[in-house]
Length: 262
Ligand SMILES: [Zn+2]
Ligand SMILES: [Zn+2]
Image (cartoon, rainbow, N blue to C red; front, side):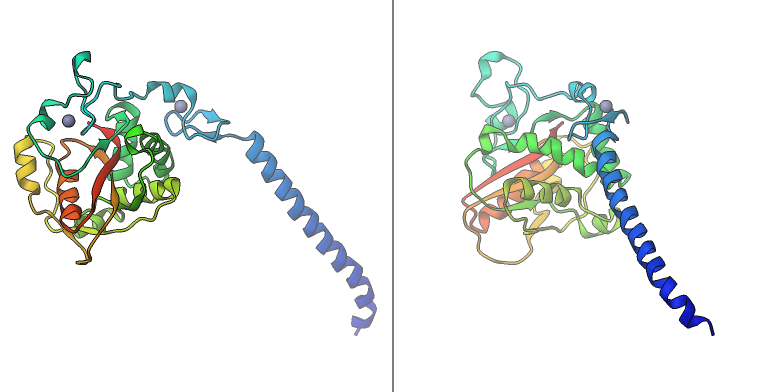
C-alpha cells in the first residue's frame, strides 16, 4: 500500500484545494457583489436594464396615471369640477359608507392594469414587488397619516377561488403594507359567497350581490382602527361590506387602501 507515502502529499494538496475552494467562494462573492452593482435588474414594465432600486424605469414610471388631486375624499373617485374640492362624489353623497376613506393612487389603466391582471390571473407573483412599490405610494397618502392601525386586513377571496389561484392577491399586498407600516396582518374575514364576475353588473347590482358576502372568521371583539387592503377599488362596495363586518365587531374606524382606482 502506498497509502502512507501519499498521505503527506495529500495533506498540502487538500489544503490547497480547500484554499482554492475558499478563493473561488470569495471571488464568487466578490463577483456577485460586482454583478449586483453593475449588472442591473430589469424594469417590470419594459424589460430595460435599471440601476435604481425601483422595479420600474423612469420612462415607465412616467406612464403611470396618478389619480388627480381632485378626488372624492371618501372613495378617491375623480371629481370633475375644481370647485368640488372637499365635497363628495355623487356616489358618496347618497350613501353612508362603513370606511372612513378608501385611498388609492393610480388610475386602473396602462401598466398598473397590466401588472394587476398578470399578477391575479396569470399568477405572476414576481409582480408583487412592483405592486408593493405602487401600494407604498398609497400608504403615504395624508388621509392615512398618523393613524395607528390595530391590524391590516386583506379583503378575502372565497376559498375555492383562492385554491384555484393559489394565493390571494390582497393578502400578498397586505403583507407588503404590513412590512411598510410596521403593522401586523390579520386574516379577520372570510368570504361566504363565491365572487360573481361583476365586470358587467351595474353599481346597484354589485352592491346587492355583495350583501352579507363577508363574515368574521372568529367571533372576537375588535377595537381600534383597521386598514383594509385590496388591489383595486371600483365602487367601494366590497370594501364597504368588509368594513361593515369589522365595525359591527367593534372596530372604531376602518380605512382602506388599494393600488388602483378604476
Ligand atoms: Zn421600463
Ligand atoms: Zn366618493
